[in-house]
Length: 183
Ligand SMILES: C[S@@+](CC[C@H](N)C(=O)[O-])C[C@H]1O[C@@H](n2cnc3c(N)ncnc32)[C@H](O)[C@@H]1O
Image (cartoon, rainbow, N blue to C red; front, side, top):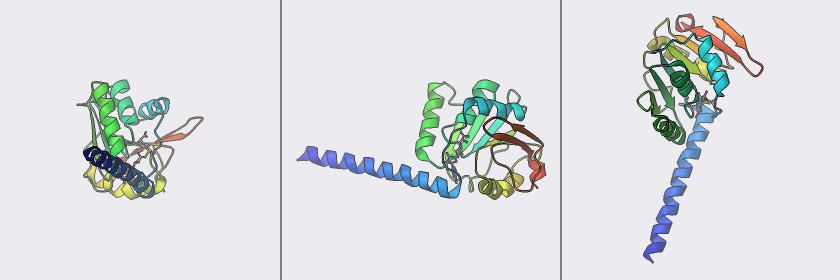
């Protein structure tokens, strides 16, 4: 009898966890953007466009599985990659990847809503979000970030702001902005 109770409890825990993850996926789609990771080659082009330097600090809002943060730290020597991500599974997976790569002190991901958290002062913000999401975040960038900080965006633009630089790749365009141009 006891064994059935344990099995039932196990099933309930699994169902609740799955519901939580799927709910977070749904919230992400409604509130920000669905999870689509940036491929490594494109991420490299983004940081080249941003002229990243060794020791720079990088922020990704809606950091997914940490794809952009890992490229910044591992390929360009960023001192820290900070992420905010609403999906708990992706946060867990990013931390797991960071531990496996022995860089857990350089990849700091917080589970949370990017519209609420105070943003850290960083050199570069890397984004792969929808235009409406970027426009919603715009006042927060102006409020929290250094005016000279760079924002590099995969595929999408801020409405009515002329990017400092653009790269057209066969797949997507990449856009570079300065925070001061968003004010
Ligand atoms: C297109 S993916 C980009 C992932 C990653 N930045 C990359 O380029 O590989 C967008 C991410 O934003 C997350 N997201 C959507 N709304 C969010 C919110 N309100 N707060 C935090 N993360 C959010 C999604 O869960 C998803 O992982």
